[in-house]
Length: 176
Image 1 (spheres, rainbow, N blue to C red):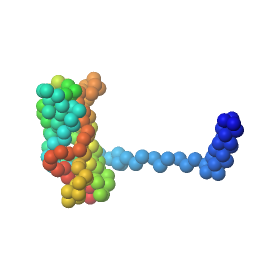
Image 2: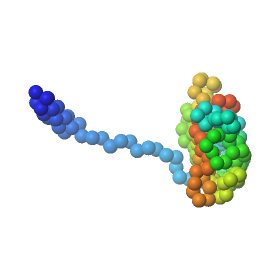
Image 3: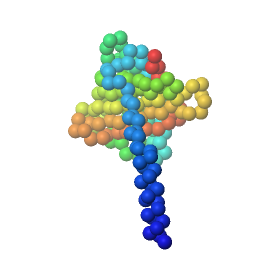
Image 4: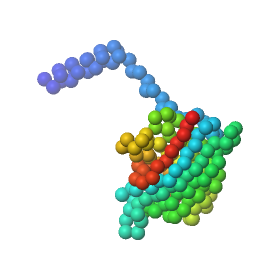
Protein backbone atom coordinates (compact mmCIF):
# COMPACT_ATOMS: atom_id res chain seq x y z
CA UNK A 1 0.00 0.00 0.00
CA UNK A 2 2.90 2.38 0.77
CA UNK A 3 4.28 1.90 -2.74
CA UNK A 4 0.96 2.88 -4.36
CA UNK A 5 0.76 6.05 -2.26
CA UNK A 6 4.34 6.95 -3.17
CA UNK A 7 3.64 6.34 -6.88
CA UNK A 8 0.49 8.47 -6.71
CA UNK A 9 2.34 11.32 -5.03
CA UNK A 10 5.15 11.18 -7.61
CA UNK A 11 2.61 11.21 -10.43
CA UNK A 12 0.83 14.21 -8.90
CA UNK A 13 4.17 15.99 -8.43
CA UNK A 14 5.11 15.45 -12.07
CA UNK A 15 1.76 16.80 -13.28
CA UNK A 16 1.96 19.86 -11.02
CA UNK A 17 5.59 20.49 -11.98
CA UNK A 18 4.72 20.54 -15.68
CA UNK A 19 1.64 22.72 -15.09
CA UNK A 20 3.59 25.27 -13.05
CA UNK A 21 7.11 25.60 -14.43
CA UNK A 22 9.57 26.98 -11.94
CA UNK A 23 9.89 30.73 -11.84
CA UNK A 24 13.38 32.03 -11.18
CA UNK A 25 13.76 33.82 -7.87
CA UNK A 26 13.86 37.59 -8.01
CA UNK A 27 17.51 38.65 -7.75
CA UNK A 28 18.60 40.48 -4.64
CA UNK A 29 18.80 44.19 -5.33
CA UNK A 30 21.90 45.84 -4.01
CA UNK A 31 22.71 49.54 -4.13
CA UNK A 32 24.36 50.88 -7.23
CA UNK A 33 28.12 50.53 -7.27
CA UNK A 34 28.94 54.18 -7.32
CA UNK A 35 31.31 55.88 -4.96
CA UNK A 36 28.72 58.11 -3.35
CA UNK A 37 25.00 58.74 -3.78
CA UNK A 38 24.70 62.49 -4.32
CA UNK A 39 22.59 63.42 -1.30
CA UNK A 40 23.36 60.63 1.18
CA UNK A 41 23.97 61.71 4.76
CA UNK A 42 24.41 59.53 7.84
CA UNK A 43 24.65 60.99 11.32
CA UNK A 44 24.01 60.26 14.95
CA UNK A 45 25.20 58.43 18.03
CA UNK A 46 24.02 55.02 19.10
CA UNK A 47 24.79 52.12 21.40
CA UNK A 48 24.18 48.51 20.36
CA UNK A 49 24.12 45.85 23.08
CA UNK A 50 24.63 42.20 22.19
CA UNK A 51 24.07 40.08 25.31
CA UNK A 52 25.88 37.04 23.93
CA UNK A 53 29.04 39.15 23.47
CA UNK A 54 29.35 40.21 27.12
CA UNK A 55 31.26 38.50 29.92
CA UNK A 56 32.91 39.47 33.19
CA UNK A 57 35.31 41.90 31.52
CA UNK A 58 33.36 43.07 28.44
CA UNK A 59 30.02 44.90 28.37
CA UNK A 60 28.97 43.34 25.05
CA UNK A 61 28.37 46.72 23.41
CA UNK A 62 29.62 48.91 20.63
CA UNK A 63 28.98 52.60 20.51
CA UNK A 64 29.03 54.40 17.20
CA UNK A 65 29.33 58.10 16.43
CA UNK A 66 28.96 59.02 12.77
CA UNK A 67 28.67 62.15 10.70
CA UNK A 68 29.17 61.50 6.99
CA UNK A 69 27.95 62.99 3.76
CA UNK A 70 28.67 62.74 0.08
CA UNK A 71 30.54 65.61 -1.47
CA UNK A 72 29.11 66.75 -4.78
CA UNK A 73 30.79 64.69 -7.52
CA UNK A 74 33.20 63.25 -5.00
CA UNK A 75 33.89 60.84 -2.21
CA UNK A 76 32.31 60.58 1.22
CA UNK A 77 33.63 62.89 3.92
CA UNK A 78 33.09 63.19 7.63
CA UNK A 79 33.80 61.29 10.82
CA UNK A 80 33.24 57.75 12.07
CA UNK A 81 34.15 56.32 15.44
CA UNK A 82 33.17 52.96 16.93
CA UNK A 83 34.00 52.13 20.54
CA UNK A 84 34.10 48.32 20.76
CA UNK A 85 33.71 46.39 24.04
CA UNK A 86 32.77 42.83 23.04
CA UNK A 87 34.06 39.51 24.32
CA UNK A 88 35.36 37.94 21.13
CA UNK A 89 36.80 40.95 19.31
CA UNK A 90 40.56 41.26 18.89
CA UNK A 91 40.06 45.02 18.73
CA UNK A 92 38.73 46.68 21.85
CA UNK A 93 38.40 50.40 22.31
CA UNK A 94 38.21 53.11 19.70
CA UNK A 95 38.16 52.41 15.97
CA UNK A 96 38.37 55.56 13.85
CA UNK A 97 37.49 55.78 10.17
CA UNK A 98 40.42 57.40 8.33
CA UNK A 99 39.30 57.25 4.69
CA UNK A 100 35.93 56.43 3.21
CA UNK A 101 35.76 54.57 -0.08
CA UNK A 102 32.04 54.30 -0.65
CA UNK A 103 28.84 55.61 0.92
CA UNK A 104 25.77 54.26 -0.81
CA UNK A 105 22.18 54.29 0.35
CA UNK A 106 18.91 52.78 -0.73
CA UNK A 107 15.29 52.83 0.42
CA UNK A 108 12.75 55.40 1.53
CA UNK A 109 10.77 54.08 4.52
CA UNK A 110 13.78 52.41 6.12
CA UNK A 111 16.75 54.01 4.39
CA UNK A 112 19.85 51.86 4.56
CA UNK A 113 23.42 53.10 4.13
CA UNK A 114 26.45 51.00 3.21
CA UNK A 115 29.93 52.32 3.88
CA UNK A 116 33.44 50.99 3.58
CA UNK A 117 36.89 52.37 4.08
CA UNK A 118 40.09 52.27 6.05
CA UNK A 119 40.46 52.70 9.76
CA UNK A 120 42.83 53.00 12.67
CA UNK A 121 42.43 50.66 15.63
CA UNK A 122 44.76 49.03 18.13
CA UNK A 123 45.83 45.46 17.21
CA UNK A 124 44.62 45.93 13.64
CA UNK A 125 47.39 47.05 11.28
CA UNK A 126 46.00 47.72 7.80
CA UNK A 127 42.50 48.09 9.28
CA UNK A 128 39.59 48.02 6.79
CA UNK A 129 35.90 48.18 7.65
CA UNK A 130 32.44 47.64 6.20
CA UNK A 131 29.38 49.17 7.82
CA UNK A 132 25.62 48.95 7.33
CA UNK A 133 23.20 51.33 9.03
CA UNK A 134 19.41 50.95 8.82
CA UNK A 135 17.28 53.93 9.87
CA UNK A 136 14.02 52.34 11.05
CA UNK A 137 12.87 55.26 13.14
CA UNK A 138 9.83 57.06 11.88
CA UNK A 139 8.81 58.94 14.98
CA UNK A 140 9.64 56.17 17.47
CA UNK A 141 7.17 53.58 16.14
CA UNK A 142 8.86 50.66 17.87
CA UNK A 143 11.35 49.25 15.36
CA UNK A 144 14.91 50.15 16.40
CA UNK A 145 17.62 51.20 14.00
CA UNK A 146 20.11 48.45 13.13
CA UNK A 147 23.89 48.73 12.80
CA UNK A 148 26.26 46.07 11.52
CA UNK A 149 30.01 46.26 10.98
CA UNK A 150 32.98 44.10 10.06
CA UNK A 151 36.66 44.94 10.57
CA UNK A 152 39.59 43.11 8.97
CA UNK A 153 43.33 43.55 9.45
CA UNK A 154 45.92 43.70 6.66
CA UNK A 155 46.10 39.89 6.50
CA UNK A 156 42.35 39.70 5.89
CA UNK A 157 41.60 38.30 9.35
CA UNK A 158 38.43 39.37 11.13
CA UNK A 159 39.36 41.42 14.21
CA UNK A 160 35.93 42.79 15.14
CA UNK A 161 32.32 42.52 14.06
CA UNK A 162 28.87 43.13 15.38
CA UNK A 163 25.27 43.53 14.24
CA UNK A 164 22.28 44.41 16.34
CA UNK A 165 19.45 46.79 17.15
CA UNK A 166 20.18 50.21 18.60
CA UNK A 167 19.49 50.12 22.34
CA UNK A 168 20.16 53.80 22.97
CA UNK A 169 20.52 56.80 20.68
CA UNK A 170 19.47 57.37 17.08
CA UNK A 171 21.04 57.16 13.65
CA UNK A 172 19.59 59.11 10.72
CA UNK A 173 20.11 58.11 7.10
CA UNK A 174 19.06 60.66 4.50
CA UNK A 175 18.92 59.20 1.03
CA UNK A 176 17.45 62.00 -1.07
